[in-house]
Length: 347
Image (cartoon, rainbow, N blue to C red; front, side, top):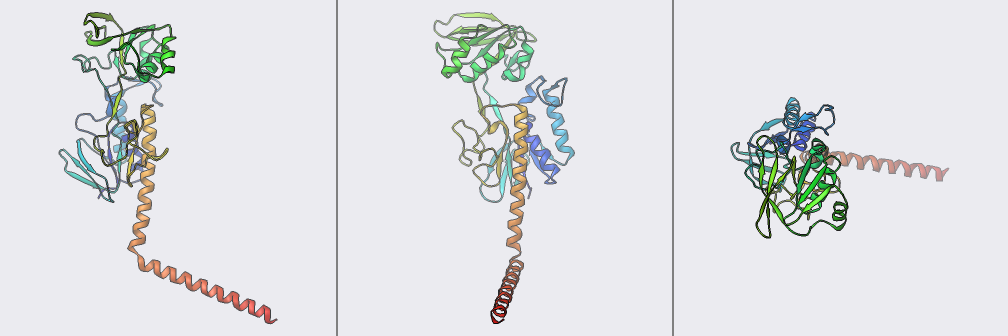
């Protein structure tokens, strides 16, 4: 029986593992067979993670986190979780190749996946002009002409943020109106650097080693045009990876795992969640890492309380004897007090 199984290997998962391992809980972290390291494995330069003044490559950061977790005793398994059973005191996690593992607690750090356009060259040019995170990568597009795809609040926020760096920002939207909130629309409309390309969708991304242009198709008349660009930001939403916990854990209206306030406690005892799988707003490496810390500490407290409860059940005779001794002592004290009171009255 394991103390804790951590599912997910991004900043949240590895940070939870570091804390759990340093508490001598011997955590097992299931990192995925093909996507170990999470979304940062698809990122080039990371310049906003504390401790790296010269920046660090996304994969290098994740390798360092894994190395640190393993240094303190984390067992990392490169496998995929296919099923979980979370109710009751014993949690079971079934994997594709490593069989079924049992633990007294589970931490979900499965993250979220950016929605993609589904175009042939999207993966090839990922990190070479295509990005899904303006906060992460906007700095690298100084004085460039770039575009944001999307029509919701996230797209307007990304486009507005990117005007701090880019010389021009196109917003490409397949319809003639936005679904973003009024205030986010107004901010974008009033920004002189932003130009809207209505009723257009991206059907091609062009460039040999980096993004050079995109091919647009008009959704009304079907005509196509090539738009020269130095970068493309895709902001059409993201999907929390919660497929394993449907019908087991409560979810929020945003589709993320629901937790109790600022804690990591989910709707089931002994099950915790951290990182982007509980965060529909910030989705940063550093906030995910902090969330992993919270999950590890909550899990450690849970196991400590569980051990105390088990100790109480395992030694009923001792507790009964202790209670009897306390009762005898209390009775003796009362008797002594009565005797003293009687002596005072007699005097």
